[in-house]
Image (cartoon, rainbow, N blue to C red; front, side):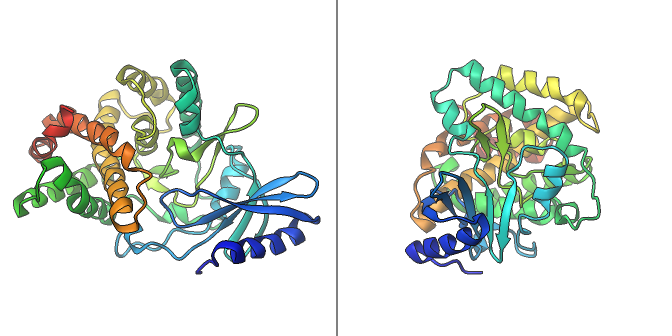
Length: 343
């Protein structure tokens, strides 16, 4: 569905929300979105109630691999997580292409961390990580949740490699890459995909990062952007948050949190398995993130995320150095990213 734009879209939201909420609507103000193309509005009623209108948009063809179907709608994954007691927004009403949701406020864990003392940030990150064992225990209940038929598989790793080769590898090398260097990158990402396929497959939020964790008025965390969930190795969501491009987390804290939460995971991988997959998935997940930051600036003229590219590059370079002993293909990738490791 192609969403209407600007004031026309706001008028449409007002008309729908009036019927849903049963009272006059005072305003429908657009909210800043992320790298996705969906639009969001905060709807306020005359009595002061508020809700978030989430409006679908025509997808960005660069946002998913060829051969992978588009993201499913928000329902029924939201309802499954709500039934499981996870902190997701309540659904207030739905219409084709629009969801009216509980308003969790504007403060994400990313914006909170920008102003908070490190211990407070770490405490909330730890609380967020405690959600992951609960998420990973969920099973298909027959309610039609497509996430259980989707998984982090070879086409995803090929897509991440393509993005990285096009946008990020020239930055890492300081020049256009040679064909052999691009091939080495693709080989490394494909090998990581093979290791991921051998791991236990558990329900993953897929974008469990600080911009999708909202700090609610009572200080608790709320989880948004749920529709991309799929099956992935247990470490995937840990990578999203502990290697978050928008947070500065110490390596000591990262290691201690992995050790703390690991025994609570349903599959409880060994410390060695978890650490290895954590570093390898860092390379592909953060490689994709870095490339998307550059893509947004170059192709869309959206430079909001460029400031986070250097931090993400350092994470990639250092993860590649730590993982270099796992396989010759990763060692070669580490060489390609060596400049970043020393930044």
